[in-house]
Image (tube, rainbow, N blue to C red; front, side, top):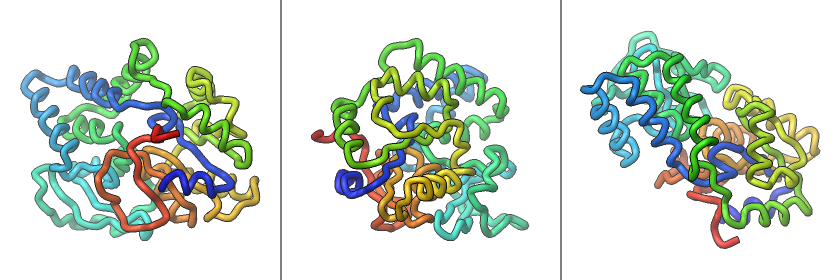
Length: 276
């Protein structure tokens, strides 16, 4: 079904990291780098929580908000931007006096309000839960990115994607909008051998805070209606929810079994590599 969305669109906006290449082992690598910063007795507890998250048996899940100030997890409605129930790490519902009823995407500060949009963020939340500083977590993230470039098996071309993008670009505008900086994004697109398929690269995008700003820019520049435009990405907060808010369609690359919200404007798929 996701192919119908792409083939009917006039403009397709792709995320880069986690979208235009395959694999999730880098998340596990990040987990190991974070665990290395913990005392021995906390390493297994970290792993146990991460395994619970992967199996869907923990409140920290894609589409939720980590409250770093209170060390709890909130549900969040991407359309109304309302905070719903709050849970502690034992999956118990908690009441929080003085908490806001809503939080907009531009209010995410990645310190007190952290959107859990893709596989990078559950390890972040667990690390904060165990007392690691934001700087220490960022250090682990940077090391993981370096290892991905240096070690084999972490950046894999999606079979058939290069050819499929080449077909799509014949009658569509293809755009990359990424939080990676320009130099890194260009290097990665060149490594994947797909850079020539895109009309435009929007780097250092500061998603999800500025996602709608970038999407509105694309709608205006290419003179298309929202329902003629598709956002493709692995981060629900960054690429899917903002697109739906603007009336666009979206393809969410995820291994999640269910949608956080019931909406027929977006579809789930675990990979773009399906019968090209």
